[in-house]
Length: 268
Ligand SMILES: O=C(O)c1cc(=O)[nH]c(=O)n1[C@@H]1O[C@H](COP(=O)(O)O)[C@@H](O)[C@H]1O
Image (cartoon, rainbow, N blue to C red; front, side, top):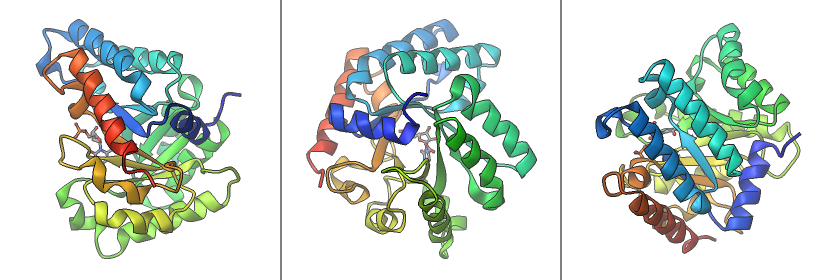
């Protein structure tokens, strides 16, 4: 069995000294055709891999291309694994338990065993179980949405709801051994003041922090998400890397290197 997802991320963070997660969210409008999109996305992946602790394709951008997009997604995931990069599949799934089982089978087993998946807890904590079970069984991970990066998250996630979800993530993590549990949490990098609180509420969860770059979050504000030694969180940027300067792959590489260095400069 290969190294479980959370351990693989942490090992890569320590070995390469990076906690950057490169998001690969290719937009067809930026390209001549899907073949051009495919080539550029794979080139960005290869160019930025040395600076990345993980890679995060957002599934919607591939689904939007139909069958061909799903083939490109498979190729991106396979290339990431060949490069030794843990894969975060960002699909934000969540459904009644029996359907959640099918989603978990699709994204956390078989060729995606060892990957992690973003999951939506809105249907209830019982509905998370199929994802958690599949992640544990197949060496994968889940990132439960605790407090998302968008400004309108407060419409539903305020009033202590994020804290209730965080408590469930901590409870699930406490059921497992190992340094970091297979159950992690999404907390937007756009909420830097909340990071120390969520860090201590979920001590053994890997945190996924989207919002660096295009959404305005700054690496220098994110130290509170990490444990001493600089482990425990992945900070994610998609447009800010892939489209750092149009389709210039060298610029994408430089952006990844820059984000990695900015994060390393503030590690506790
Ligand atoms: O789960 C996510 O990755 C996610 C959660 C969240 O709270 N906010 C958020 O932006 N994301 C994803 O992170 C990526 C952010 O993209 P950029 O804003 O281009 O860096 C997108 O794929 C979003 O779907």
